[in-house]
Image 1 (tube, helix red, strand yellow):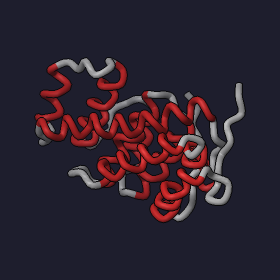
Image 2 (cartoon, one colour; image 1 turned 30 degrees about the vertical axis):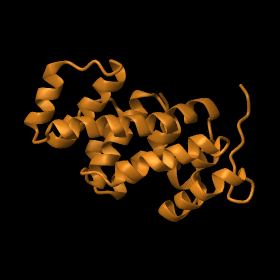
Image 3 (cartoon, rainbow, N blue to C red; image 1 turned 120 degrees about the vertical axis):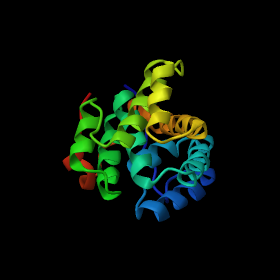
Image 4 (cartoon, one colour; image 1 turned 90 degrees about the vertical axis):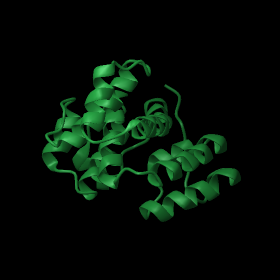
Length: 182
């Protein structure tokens, strides 16, 4: 497999540096996945723009992390699973719910379970979701606009999940306790 570089703030292409700086400010570091994404200024800048929309939406940080973790597991993307496991716990998701998502089970929390089920169905069925999944989602207290917002989160995580699967960036020490294999 081809070796993809993991760029730093110093070594990244000039057009990728503003996005890397934004991610460094958000996370207190440049995650290795961002360093890999930086190999394409269009990709890294697109990602940062989409993630601003994700984090500026109506979901809580714990809900966003549950979606991102579900997406990473469904896309079998090891680096993002470890990263979003760590962030989900930091955002207040229970260890049991994080573990359930990592094991492709529904979390105990009904609203988190509805988010996870919808995200998984969207990915596995390429957007063709049964009415029952949407009805369950709405029954958990969400509305149709939130269905569309879940699609935004799926779109955002697709960029990092696919990049992780192709570039295979190394996992940082701080996330090693959450390492995962498909």
